[in-house]
Image (cartoon, rainbow, N blue to C red; front, side, top):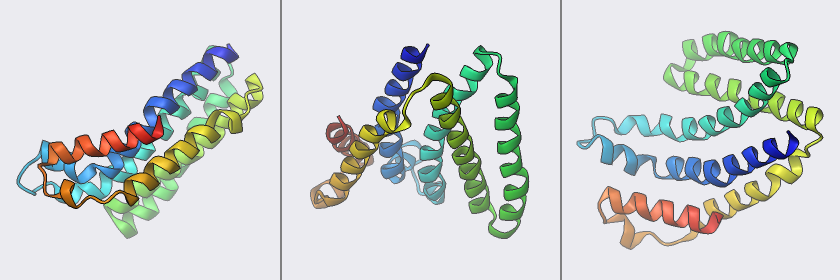
Length: 177
């Protein structure tokens, strides 16, 4: 079981992290490709954090489904209540004060709390070290993001959105892997 969970987390890290980074960094180009005309351009600010949050939710699901498979209802309830509290309490206050940005922040809070609880549950249940699972991909993610930021984009910025998106994916996945 531990080996299966390790492999699952490895696949999520190797594919999910660079994909989430590509979505976050290329959000403007992706929105431009999907919805030309600029009407949806303001949604870029929401796509960026939600791309990263979706990765956290996917990784959190590993712990959730492990608890279901092992019949550990206590963890399932704790996870659900913690996330619901983040969304109800944090979400209500943040949405009232920050509007749509508050929604994004509350969803990120719920995902972060869920991921932290899930990582703790998986590591304790299966004796899997979070450092050995997450440290190498997080270093690769930092390298990919740094490389993207440092590579001059003057010739790329004048290209169509599809070319810019492909360039972003090439740089991120290339450096990450």
